[in-house]
Amino acid sequence: MDRRSFLRRMTAGAALAGVLTRSEIPLRAAAAAASDDAPAGAEGGGDESLRITRVRTILTQPQGIRLAIVKVETSEPGLYGLGCATFTQRIRAVETAVDRYLDPFLRGKDPANIEDLWQAMFQSSYWRNGPVLMNALSGVDMALWDILGKRFGMPVYSLLGGKCRIACPVYGHAGGSTAEEAVRSIQRYLAEGYRYVRCQVGVRGQSVYGPQSGAAKLREGHFSGRVFQPSAYLRAVPRVFAGVREALGDDVELLHDIHERLHPIQAIQLAKELEPHRLFFLEDPFAPEDVGYFQHLRAQSSTPIAMGELFNNPCEYVDIIAGRLIDFIRCHLSQIGGISMAKKLAHLCDFFRVRTAWHGPGDVSPVGHAANLHVDLATWNFGVQESYRFSDATREVFPGAPEIRDGMLWVNEAPGLGVDIDETLAARYPITDDPPFDMHWGELRDIDGTIRRP
Ligand SMILES: [Mg+2]
Image 1: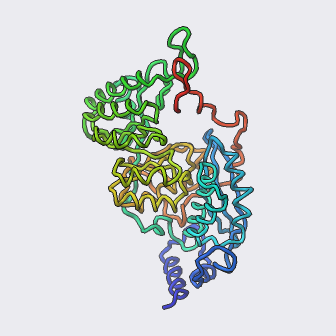
Image 2 (image 1 turned 90 degrees about the vertical axis):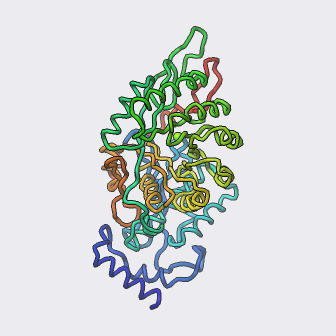
């Protein structure tokens, strides 16, 4: 059977099985794609009948967080893909990179040649990497996988190798300034069926990462804005975890995020002090600039380590994975190159027994959370997924957004990523440019006024 007839048979079979729930698969386009052996999206290669006609950003903030969606439109009426390019702190820069540079670069190219287009986009700026360019590229990458799934009537996880699990366990975000507060906060998640909970620890009068403890002047003459003292936080965390573990026993998997706020030697101290409390993982003990400390940490502590939401390019993560210095990779998919790079990274990690725990905060759109989930489902060495609760407004703007039930994230079975955007509704939540970005970042200082990492 030649490829054309195989494809025709496959898509017809899928239609009979009721798979084509969102859109009819254009047999002509699918068969034409199968008949094309040319690898490149460059001129002269690719599918003659399907082309990228436009690439643009849609900016919206239904939940008060600026989100950037990339929409890739094609010559097939109604066939388009969506991706997440949310670099919320510099969203106008991403908008420019997509609308002014990638759109003219991609028009006329074949959307099926995802790897080739990835490499072409990556090389197209000569100076590569960086969060602006990688978010722009990643948004397009996810949209191309979305288009591919829609064309062939398959969810993206199927294109990536199929499901390794029925749904993906997620962790929620709890915390408190005392063990009692933290226990109450964690119990709310346990009551909803969560088995994994991240617990952050507040310090009175300080602006720690996680719990809302607020800013306060500690003493006359001290800096009075958002204050963070590494040593006070270092003392508080083991105390709270001891009380939490004693109260809740071993049935809950506990996580904690240092958020690169400690001096490296303090992070090593904390990893050692938390060892008796059996964390599922301790996240971001070091800044990406300090990855050389991982070998020292590893030599002294068996607390599982997660790292990676700030990583941007392979120079930052390949060595610590191959060196068996971390246990979980936490990359933010739109920072590293989208689904295409995530599946490569997950496979690399597989060889070194490192599990995935992709970044999944509020500044990842529902389209980005769906991308995380499709990769999670198809990844054997999946660890856990960070979750975010979408508001009703967000769900209306993004029909098909993944759902959390019983502590797990569930995908819908629609072709592609399974998430759409209602552009009319999205326009009701325009992003605001005043202030130009969330001013929370870049304001954290020690009591003497020294700037601290966020
Ligand atoms: Mg984090």
